[in-house]
Image 1 (cartoon, helix red, strand yellow):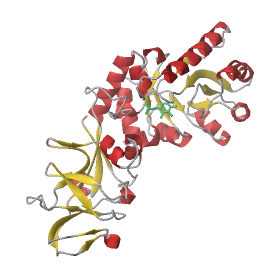
Image 2 (image 1 turned 180 degrees about the vertical axis):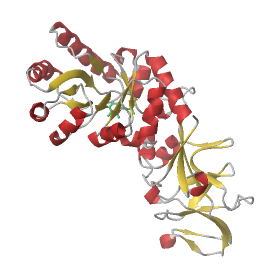
Image 3 (image 1 turned 120 degrees about the vertical axis):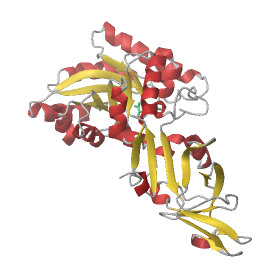
Image 4 (image 1 turned 90 degrees about the horizontal axis):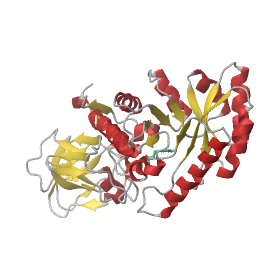
Length: 371
Ligand SMILES: *Cc1c(COP(=O)(O)O)cnc(C)c1O
């Protein structure tokens, strides 16, 4: 199907993804692990993974084993790491598809070992270290023992060691340096003991672009591969290109009488006779049901009137005399000289760009352009 068939759709510029992968690789001077969890932050996991690999990324990472298996099913055969928890019952599937799992609890790790060795398989694992995120991970002091103990388990191959930054996207502050120091000391200690895993990694996008000392053996690029800013305090250079646009079209135009309310509960009411448009995008698509949404039509910002419905909402066409049926309406992206960014939408919704693009519903078709 082409775009003409859709009510609302997302366009992903795969050229932008490739451009951004090359930039991260150039700036960090390291191989890039493309982080494509969460349907590639809403961009379409399989296509983004393929493009990233074609542009030189050497690894992919996801959050869940289901995502990893989906990539394998689509024929993506690169080294692939699951960053989050994996249920022991899935360890055989992981081993069979050469998917690397993250380990951080002895009990779960031993279950993996028992299950995969019983199946005559070997599972590659990456040991997660908590240097200050307080999410998954062993404390640095526990790591050497942990590695020594699991080395004697049949069925496991310790391939990697990694940590994750909590504050790399904040204005220069010492905490990331502290995390890097903790992690570097640990890596040196493991080296001395002859138990340093071959693939050591730490940096997320902000870390890879702002902290040269965080490079280690590879960098994990997430938000920056999509051309989205890690934060206001850690903006990308303008060489990066945002890959995602979210669009819909005008499907009805009319003038409602003065005093008539708009949408459920009439949270907006026309003061005079008012020209409005209906667009087929709603909260089931990920457009938040808050007052004050804005969209681009004819290169101008117009307000959404009243409540966003599940599948539709209404916009003001008072200042758009030229509006006609079928006109493109932009929720995120550019229209002529006007631009609406995921960052702006995030700020207005009281959240971050990550949550905005991850929140675009699965039912919204992704259309891939640019290659
Ligand atoms: C999501 C994630 C990343 C990518 O982070 P960005 O800020 O999007 O670059 C890297 N590492 C881990 C462990 C993650 O969970």
